[in-house]
Image 1 (tube, rainbow, N blue to C red):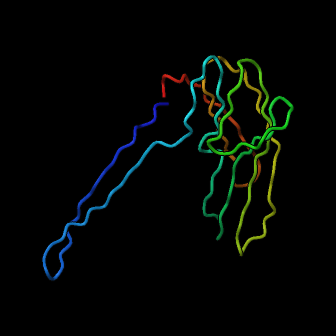
Image 2 (cartoon, rainbow, N blue to C red):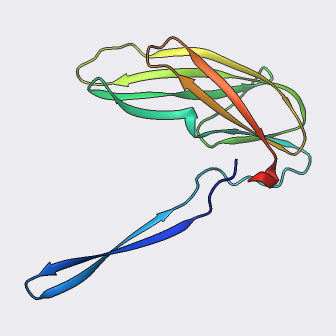
Image 3 (cartoon, rainbow, N blue to C red):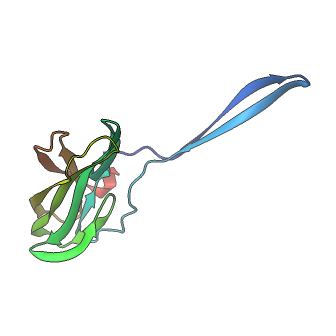
Length: 154
């Protein structure tokens, strides 16, 4: 997926006051977000994408959903969250962690929900694998997916 480069936009809006017209400039700077990866040099990168952490208004509170990865090939690792990445040797790898659903509200008393999540991947050299997660609002299912891309397509 090709991400847009940074761009800047300045909009000038005339404002009329007693003493005349003043131009009010509003600046906007927008950039494509994501981690800056080093050169792969024959390795593969696993990146936790933008959908691995989300928050939204829900039933009078805030609903937090997402994915945390804390295991690689059966060994514990420092937990990974949104935009974190791992550089790995090509081959078969298994990621482990959990999906979560948390509602924070003064009106609702829903228990937090966690579900174990595992994803087995066959990694190829010089590829970037971006993980995405979808947790439904009814706490019924957590879907994990990985998108593969070549670094030159970024």
